Length: 434
Image (cartoon, rainbow, N blue to C red; front, side, top):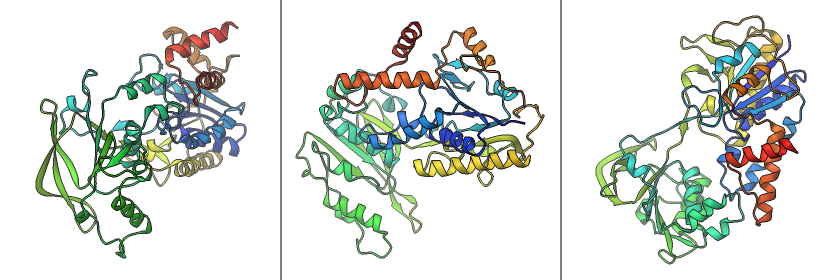
């Protein structure tokens, strides 16, 4: 029986899984489904625009997509809980009769929330002018956001940032950002070297002895950077920022524009423990960066396979990337994880260990072959697309969009100018007429 694999998601983990399976089983059919019309997941939507080198992995994804056994179907939502207005919506179970195997590589979609904060403070009305921001906890993301908000918009203009976002940054009235963390810092060098921003000094009492044998080399470097401070002297620039450690948000008020923190100390295991004291700060907006999570209850990390609630394996269903492990890791670790999952799938397929034949019980992929028309779209998917009047974006179309975005960007002296969905539909409609 031939291997027919559906992968839910089209980010790095999904592409790495597809590449690995096709390299191990060249005759396999691999289809990627994503609720967004553009592929590549966080490489497109989550990489800081001033770090374009991180996106170089898309060349590898393009190579995978050139394999005739590979297909990408974008703008197809398989989530019944969170449907998207513009995307084709089908239940996940509709895939089961058409594929022999399934990989869930849709990322970690559950954002970690602070339920004790005023939601109006976190999501204010667009008419409010913000002068001070508070960020919390996830250093990689918050440092990216803070760095862009503190940067000169004119210097950001050539990057992969839409013009309407640049316009918003130019009209921004932000002059100070508080970066708040329960514990310690990471990835600060770029923030400290911003030409148009300066950092408030950190009290020397917070710094341990840099020669302490308990500190790693990386920790010593980070602490030395913090002790030295920003390239510009404190309060010498129009925009400023401060880094506040050992604080946990207790509550906030959108009316008073304040946030109250519990002050922390670290125990012997470097876990944050409250001191019983608190601190109130004025702020106009709170931006939380607490990370994302996925449901670990149905995943066995030792096997790379999904499990039922009672613990039994679900035949031929696997998980990879953030969907399996939560929102952590970099591209390299994502690739190794995806390869491991793909190898497990192929080993199960070859040995028949995961039950590669015949079963069409609820929750299991079946064995009915996928019929492709000249358009390359499975017949069952094309029928739903016609019924709902929603467009499916395939990889060939994405490459045309990609080239058009690059062309539009070059015309105005930048890396690319991203297209909105309305523009994409108009562009593809014109291409279909030509």
